[in-house]
Image (tube, rainbow, N blue to C red; front, side, top):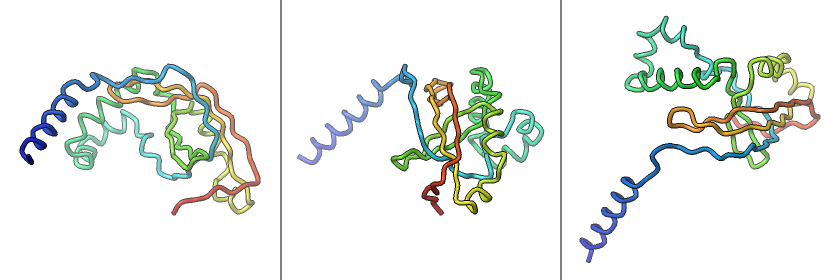
Length: 160
């Protein structure tokens, strides 16, 4: 009996794997998110292609086997028009973090005032972003179509 159950499980796993999706598909509608930016002071997604090429030896050591995949993904992002965008992680009202790429100008404007100084004043940013999901390579990436940030007197829950 255990052998039969094991065979059924193995066969169903094989079928699901073989018949799975060929590639990622993104939803075709624009979504809206209201939430707080997650304050991360080291933005690793901002590594550009020139810096990667200049420090190829160090990058290969740091990324190991994932280096070639990272370079291909970065090239696909540039080809899809994300070269003038920065990744912003936003914590929505349901406490889930979503990464959305916003234009560089909006990103710089958001961080004109140091978030630590805002916290001392009891204020924080509340962002409203309309975004669409786009397939880049084999991954779904969120790109902002509209971005609005405002200061509010509410301090969001900050994870440590």
